Each structure stands twice: as structure tokens, then as C-alpha cells.
Image 1 (cartoon, one colour):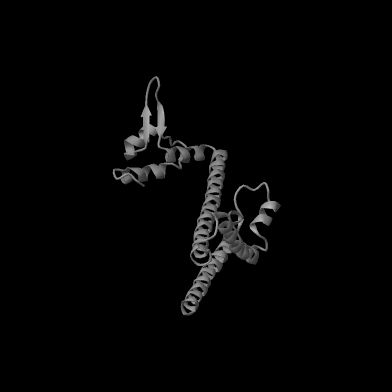
Image 2: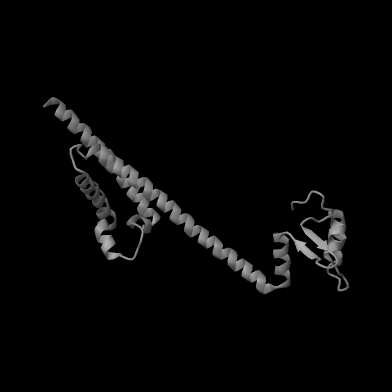
Length: 191
């Protein structure tokens, strides 16, 4: 596959003879006849046959069906784990993006400059809880009380479609808050 000097013409008779009961092949003969790379043979004390990982896996699979099954199962497990990790990562990034959209909208449109940090935190929590109740049916505080053993926040356990819905709700909220704030600013200009 990745061997530009592989002797395909020398390989054809070997394939034809491979079905014969008297056919034998050693790694050193294979390398000599075909120009194969990825296999090294050393004779004498400390010698042996060494192969590139893919070649070794294929050989071990041919020798042992049990090993081949193990290899397949391990590959499937790793792919499933990778998909779960990617799903969590995508959900986490979406939740983080939603959080910034929402908090920026609240900061620019709803929080008066005269409030104390505690009052500001209350405004943020109240606004976020309006969306949480609309989408999940509970506030963050209620969720934490119901799930004390879970370490992350509510959005980390949400399904991807819920996070997309939350992003849309936050975008609409931001747009509406901007519209209301603009209307309020216009009205206060004429009073």
C-alpha cells in the first residue's frame, strides 16, 4: 500500500502457490522476493522477526481468531468512546456559547450600572431561570438540589437538541431585550 518498490510481478506466483499444501514462506524469503518493507528479520542470538504495527496485527489476526475478535471489539469500544467524548465536547461548547450570548444581552440591556455585585448576580440568575423553566421545567437551583451528586451544570447533561433550542431562545431573548432597550432609550429621550 505504501511501498513504491514492491515487486508485484514476483508476488503473483506466490499467491498462486499459496494454496498448495507444500507451500512454505519465511519472512526473510518474503522480503527478498517482493521487496517488502515493514518487516525485519535478524538471525542468530538476539535475532527474530520484527514487523510494523499494522503488519503485526494482521499476522496475529491470521494466527489467532481470538486475537482478531479482541482487536475488532477494542476498535469498536474506542470508536464509541470517541463519539461520546465528541458529543460531550460539542454540547459543552454549545452551552458555553449560549452562556456568553445570554450574559452579554443581560449586561448590555437589563443591568443598571448602579447595582451592587450581589444584585447583578440576582438579575443574571433570574433571567437565566426564565429560560431554564421554559425549556427544562426547573430552575438551576432546583436542578442542583435534585442532583447533588452531579458535578457539572444542568446544560452539560442536556441533549444536543435542547441546547440548540436554548441557543435559539437566548438569541430571541437578546434580540427582544435590545428592541425593548432601544424603545426605552427613545422614550426617555423625549421625556
